[in-house]
Length: 247
Image 1 (tube, rainbow, N blue to C red):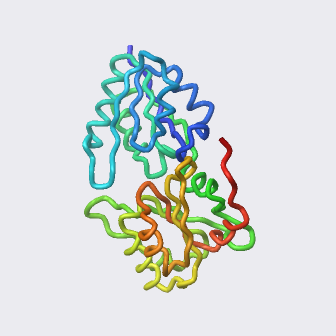
Image 2 (cartoon, rainbow, N blue to C red):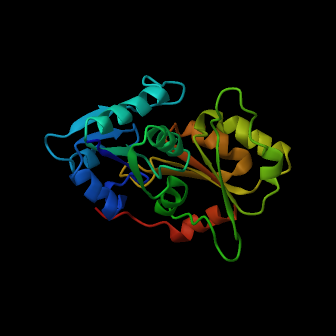
Image 3 (cartoon, rainbow, N blue to C red):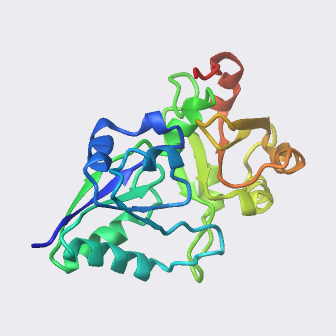
């Protein structure tokens, strides 16, 4: 008898932001396959005899290629195990969760998605930055700053012309290029912008600056991945809406 795989979103970093359903899945897991950005505290919720498979990746460093991750999930399920694939944020927001689901479905295996809080929304909220606000942003746009090799770069010309909030995930290694491209495309130099590093965790840090100064200031502050880049008028609300996180 084959097992089942749950693709569980672990949220933006704070372990308490895991959903109740995600926690229930973890507590009955027989195997957990987890990513680098998953808070280690969450692994303690799994049973003591659970198998753990660390398949974490970093930019330009994929010690376990995606096809091998897919195979680990398939093999665990074929052994009849309850498998939790624990992914940072939400499985379907730049998390390759859909690729893993397709691989499992092609093998006729049972799989279910448990949505998580994406850092593109929850991570910014933890920094006091709303992605929308009735008076200055009626839409938001989430893009990746790290494209698959051989893919065309983002159309920064079009993105610069959008009036809503622009959220860029996995963009820290390209922050200078991204900011320069948006400015070249006509985005106002004084557009409020920020970088949020290690969002929603006790190590969260935020740097705010006009778009024209964002790359320089974030680099001077030593900011690095994992971090979010956010550009738009909503960033100016941070001075009022930022809050102290409870213990």
